[in-house]
Length: 199
Image 1 (spheres, rainbow, N blue to C red):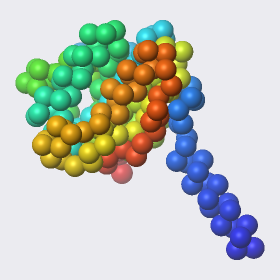
Image 2 (cartoon, one colour; image 1 turned 120 degrees about the horizontal axis):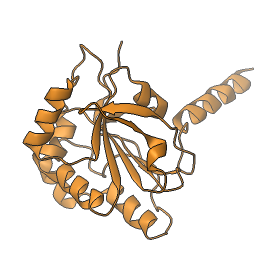
Image 3 (cartoon, rainbow, N blue to C red; image 1 turned 60 degrees about the horizontal axis):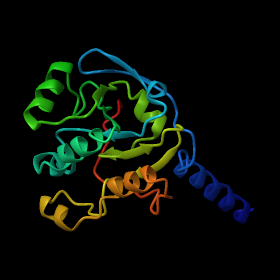
Image 4 (cartoon, rainbow, N blue to C red; image 1 turned 90 degrees about the vertical axis):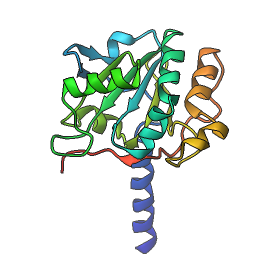
């Protein structure tokens, strides 16, 4: 009986952890950005899409924004036709929650250039993708399939100095997928602050 129960527990953990494995179809969603414009994932079919879960108060997020790393990545990849959607799933009253005006001020101050910053205060998009941390990155190919999900790089610290020697998983995935090659590392454990969903 114990062996059967253990097997069930392992099966549940495996299914939960692999709810959105690479190769699966990315769930469609609709979300309103900081300028009041509605976006859906399906409208970007035919393009590569990056989803970045964000929280400006998170030290791990600050590592990438205060250093200019995230802004540089946004500029680099949107310049190559990639759609970059930053998603803020912090609930009202939780750390990281922002109004549209606050988010626009932050983007301007940071000189950030995502395609759009989607405000997801109810956590609908976050839960759909089981987003765990800020940042948590997803890469979706033009057919609508996930080709990468997980950490932005292999240095799970808030230290900006670590960026100099980091292997950027996001760029690795985009470079390979856009060249028609398999993504060597298609899933990693995301690191950062937990997404501040409603209690």
